View 1: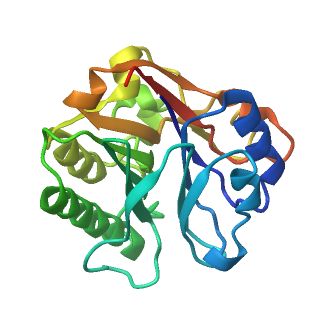
View 2 (view 1 turned 90 degrees about the horizontal axis):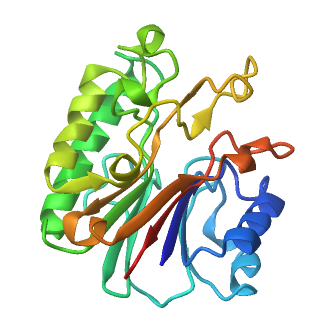
Length: 256
């Protein structure tokens, strides 16, 4: 099974890129973030024509998440049981085969100390509660998406310039580590111990050309799934396309 996560930064702006990705990689499951379109205007056909089922949870111009799968999708749930920001569509979950998938778009937070930053920390607390209420560490569970946090200095270009800033502040990292300690394995780090491998590069100042990036897009799994993960890669060639998303897809292969 090949699972991919990708912040596409507007599905309508990246239709050709998504089609190229699906045709070249043929993932069994694709989790998307920042679809930025209401459900009734989501371009379902590009997935259906390729044999995918598609479940979506979108809003106009902002946020939005979706799961496409070549296998049957069951038990779909959208959002938290008690939403902390009504209308902000950032989480969709489903069961595919015997694996639970939670697709996340964690808030960016804008700047440390800002109102949006405190909302981000609140959202992370709500996410941990959501996981604790709905799953057990022995379940087959994958959480993936744009976490908007670089967990470690290895995940940042020139960390000495960014430590303490948004996506790398101690509070964000502590909240994310608390979720990880519930029972997750960072699948990328299971296979890659080195730094300099990123998933997001700003559009400004030639960041991609200089590889001045962050690793903020993640695939985490409980041990019962992680032990079957044979490879993880970043498809950074998608970032080289004309008018790309500022994120590259991350893919994990499982012997399931």
